[in-house]
Figure (cartoon, rainbow, N blue to C red):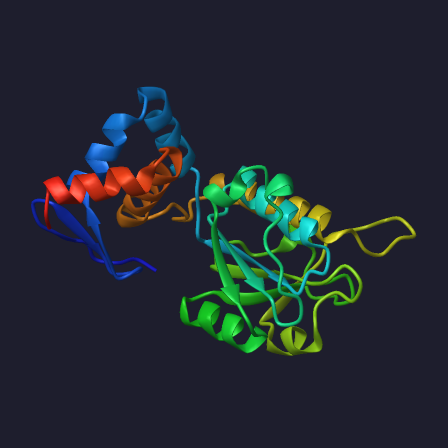
Length: 239
């Protein structure tokens, strides 16, 4: 998933997102931020990854999706994919506790679109389920970019995703209960895999242009009245 960066004096073209990043505008916004804030952004981005991505399917209780988002943010997963084929709901901002400002949310209205999009991006589809004997968590091969799918609280993953999956993953359990709440399962799996990833030789970090994109987006998320400031900047500095 590497890409080529094309530079001129003021901009960088990021092929992955097909966007131009205005470096002068980024510098202008970051000049408004405190040094501590800018340093915090760089430290957090240094631990962010798209090597793994998370997908949740039709989660009925929206606070569980919000909690999964929070786990993504805490453990460094940059993207969360939400399939809303049956239930159309907004992220619970109170449960997410601001995580929606720092994690990219990709929304899909069908399983087919989500799976095909992630496969085109180079991910293998991994279904998390206690009902398959393919792979235990500690044995999972972290070397391949993987999209980890989590299902509903009541029914687990749909048959369509199970059929489209390239592999299965489950958490070892030794009690009578054979399943965990989706938000708990996601937290356990994300923490385990990202910790192993950071202790490996795998190239899991964000690319240069991805970091620049997030610096710009996070700076904008951190500044009040950003629309007015942006309009004034481009009025004074026409493209």
